[in-house]
Image (cartoon, helix red, strand yellow):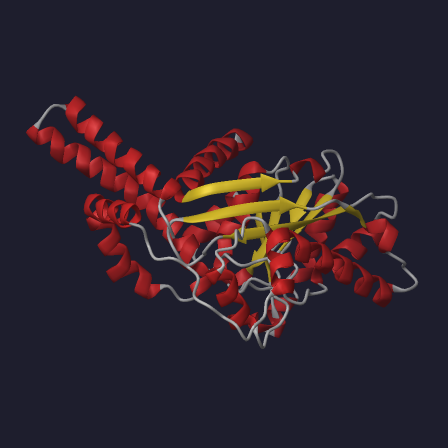
Amino acid sequence: MKNFAYQIVKTIIKAALHLYFGKIIVKGLDNVPKDKPVLFLPNHQNALLDSLLIVIDCTRKPFFLARSDVFENSVFRAVFKFFQMLPIYRIRDGRDALKNNQAVFESCTALLKNKEALLIFPEANHNLQRRVRPLSKGFTRILFATLEAHPDLDIQMVPVGLNYKNMMAFPDKAAIHYGEPIAVKEYYNPLKVRESVAAIKELVSERMKKLTTHIASVDTYDEIEKQLDALEVDYMQPEAVNKTIETLKLDTVENLKSGSSIMGMLLKSIFWFLNFPVLIFWKLVVKPKIWEPEFSATLRFGFSLVVYSIYYGAIFTILTLFSTPLVALLCVLSVLFFNWIYVRWGKV
């Protein structure tokens, strides 16, 4: 029964994400092992949306490790539990809280032993920058503890690259690239644990850098990103973007990006007219309360999922008072269809 409910919710979330994103590209799903324990290792930029985008099309049903503070809200806690998320505690949560990680790690070992799939964000934090940050060794602790208890277990690591056109804007586009699996046993030496940790971290990091846009330089990050935006690169194609980065000359930044077209401005104006109550409530009430910019897209998606259900219902109810239910339904479907057109083809 729980699995049936999970599939129903997954289908609803998938449909909602495809309405929220103008395009979702998935590549490399055939790299995901179907009958072995798997550890997904994606980059982390966009809070909960990173996890949801992997869930909706993944051939496995992964368990997730997420920062413990997001479990403090009772509503979020229930949602996270339903989606098989486990809390992971960090030093900022207090030294006493770190003791709770042992039980979490033991749960992860049990899941891998049963050939389940886990998802861990190895950067151990999220950030809007288009770069792979230094990896934490936390995921290697889980892997090595599992192999220590079950030496013959063939655990596969699957690097994942999450790519967004513009996380802070709407509409947005997303691409998920799954890399080739890595057999943990080939890089684990119980007599040289420190060297094994370093080798796996380096290998996973290099694979992730090929699956997402990686602007390596922190000092010149802003200049490089401006160049890429000016060139209107396709962030859905990280391999091509990374090759472009290698050719950039930072002393010749030019604003090559064209302005919005007349059609684009017209679409946006109609979108605002048809959705004014929702958009104004978002901008004036909800958006100012977002505590971290990385949560903007996630909260915008959640807000849309809830509020648009109410908004379409309100339009139908009001129009039914002045016309027939059929006319009211056609109007609601027309607004829904236009919104989909705008999300699909509107310019960020």
